[in-house]
Image 1 (tube, helix red, strand yellow):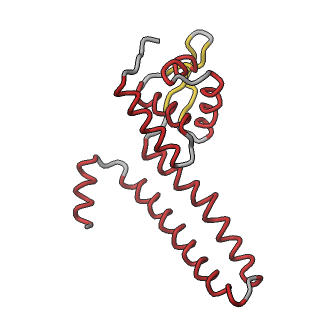
Image 2 (cartoon, rainbow, N blue to C red; image 1 turned 60 degrees about the vertical axis):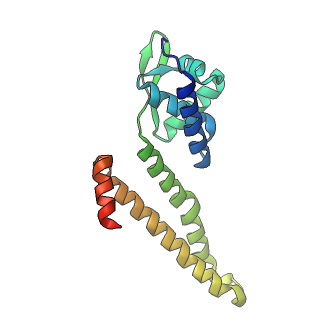
Length: 168
């Protein structure tokens, strides 16, 4: 590997790591994904380990996670070493995150409330019904955000800025 990261790259990767950590993905996964994005070339686990200063075990475990999420994939081999590349953008990451919120957080609560609303005490049932409405609204808004993202992702940043100014 000939690639070396300096202070600016390391600070940028720390920012990505904090961002992905806030999304529940974890700092290591974020830094590894960011490394592949920044390098823009396939890297081996050893290369990633050297660039991120993570152990091979941490790199391997997080690459598996990133592969399951569709953010990274194996793209070949260099000698005996598998090499990986980022397969997604920050927009893909946000879409993935919104889907996870819908499927793992909002939908289970909605199902629970719908299936158990009659078991609630009369003193809390009205509020539970309001909360059910709010959860449904939140799910719809996130679905709308995903649909909007899919439709608008083809536009450049400049074009999106113009569209946004028209909407505001």
